[in-house]
Image (tube, rainbow, N blue to C red; front, side, top):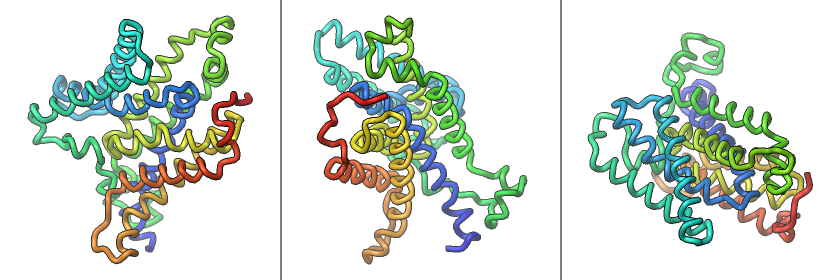
Length: 309
C-alpha cells in the first residue's frame, strides 16, 4: 500500500487504536496490581449510562459533557461497589459484578428508549466503535502531515484520544511515588501521609477519562481488553513495576497494530471475501498475547509474589 492510500485510509485508525490501547493499559497496570482488574471492566460498562445521560441532558455529542458524565458514573459506581461490599459483607468481585452489569443494562435501556436516531450513538456503536470509518479524507500522502489545511481535517477522535493519553501519562508521572507505594503497601502509604482513598478514586476517574475518550472510537470491547490483557501479560514478564509499564505499552501497541492489520487482511488471506471488526480483532490479539505470556512468561510461576520497586 502506497502512502497515498495508507495515510488517508489507515494511518488515523491505526494511531487511534494504538493511543486508545496505551491510554487504557497504563492505569490498568495499577488496577491489576491492586487486584482491582474488574474495576477496569466496570468502568468500561458504567461509562455508557454516563454518556447517555450527558447526551440526554445537553442534547449534543461533545467531549466535555461526555467526560463529565463518564467520570460521574465511574465515581457513582465506586461508591455503590463500596457500599454493597460493606453493607452486604460480600467479596469485592461480587459487588463489582452487580454494579457494572446493572449500570450497563440501565445504559442500554436508556439508549433504546431515547431518541438517538439523529446521532451516532447506539448499542452496536457502544460495543464495537467505529474505528474503520475514522479515515482522513483531506490527506493525499505523507506530505499531508506537514500541511495545516489537511491537518485541520483530521478526525476529531485522534486529538481527543491523544490528549487523554497525555493526561493519563502526566497523572501517573506526577503521582508515581504515591501510586507505587499505595499499590504495594496501602498501610505503609497511609503512615506516610498519602491519602490512599482519594488517590484510589483519582485513579478510577483517570481510568474513566481514558475509557470515554476511547469509547466513541473503539467501543467497549477494546476498552475492556486493554485495561486487563496488556498489564496482566506484562506482569508475567517482570517483577519490576517500571519494566511492567514498558512491557504493557509494547503489548498494547502490538495488539493494536496486528489486530488492525489482521482484521482488514486476515480474512482475505484465508480466502474469505469480507473483513472483520477491527475492535474485535484487536481484543482477540490482546487475549492471545496474554495466553502466550501465561505459558512462556518468565514470572508466570511467581505471579502472586510481591514485586520489587
